[in-house]
Length: 243
Image (cartoon, rainbow, N blue to C red; front, side):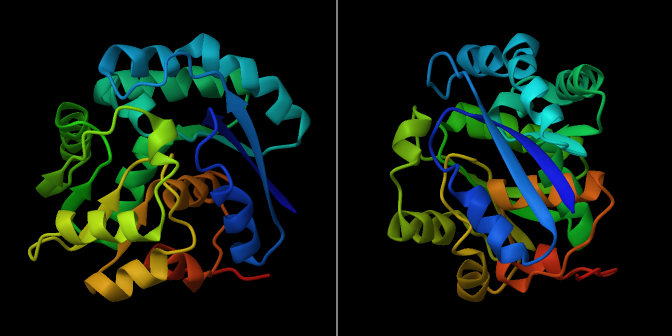
């Protein structure tokens, strides 16, 4: 059994995680602890407070007791908003606090893009344009070429959590660019786990979504590879281990 730990901000699309655990179809356990988000706002100052060391540390003890082998801060905006160096310091602090390998969803996207062997990406963000631009800057710092960015201007994660299949597919279509080798949907408040293969079929390219890459990143930290095509192209890369 491989136990993975996640710190998830508030309550929006956390049901993606048990769904992903089921889709992995292996000896993987997904443990999720909710963190206090403070003000629910896709605004730089509120996002930095949401990702502060004190707020993340509050959930670490519970995950350690669960036997987690790795911890991921399951929040994109609450990590990239610190910039590349600041986000690195955030996960270093989390790793020291937990005594475990740690990462965040922002770095999960960077590592997943590298795993797929692509460079040119498009971004479909629920965030306001300025926050979406910060994510694009973060991806560029990680070596990606961002060819298109679409923001939706949504302020709260609570509103994003109400989106369903229709809104998700509309965002994906409008955000995609013909020159992009992959599409990235960065908000962990967005329900995506049930739709990745259909999105990839629709667009004809890999689609990386926040909760999908977050779990993949935890598996990477735990040195596990699981073949799960129902979670998209990212989960069909070699080498594969399937229990």
